[in-house]
Amino acid sequence: MNDKIYRVEFGKFKRYFSTSRVNRYLIATGNSTEKTVKLYKANLKVAQVFHPLVCILEVVLRNTLNNVLTSHFDDPNWIINQKTGFMSDPTLRFTHKQTGQVITNDFLKREIAKAEKRLQNTRTLITSGKIIAEQTFGFWSDLFEVHHYRLLKGKPIQIFQTLPSGYGRKDIKDELDKVRIFRNRINHNEPVCFNGNVIDFTETLAVYNSIINLLELIDPELLKLISNLDMVQETIDKAQSI
Image (cartoon, rainbow, N blue to C red; front, top):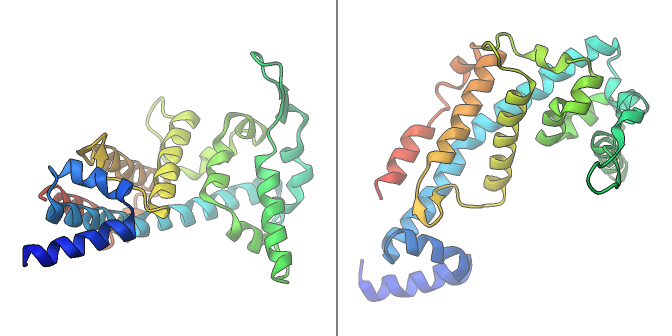
């Protein structure tokens, strides 16, 4: 590629993707404009190959938790009816020990109310199925938050067929949070290829391992389902070769 033409194209690249964003890639590639563009695209490709795995985990997590809680409450409409049930339990209102501030943990209830409002705004019939489909990854992972988990009598953990010895609620919550934060990063086009200003996919691979671990703990058969969709390692290997 002609150097002059490439410089013009890189100038446009910085203008469209912002100098502050692009500079991090420049630093990581030793100020090579060609490698900067390649790394930026490689970062997008890594984010791209994560989407099928995250989507599968999210759907499986949602449906298995819904099944467990439908059985627990003996109510297919639990997600609506429990707004005045465990989601409004007095123990979710407490005083912060250090600040003395009264805090109400009403996240779940607020998320359902927001989903209901979205459906109302589009004149869509509100059903439990619609509300369930509207909930975010954060809603489902929050069922493993210590207060909600206690109110649910530990039922959420039942979605996992086998758990290693000593592996419990907190471990699951930590893994889910790791995936949730990463999911938000790729959805907002944030880089996943750095440690500081150095090209490093260590944390990204840790998220990948969490996804695989969570799916396997729910049902090892799920790994067969994703086998021909899982291109994470090979895509990262290509990115690291830049």
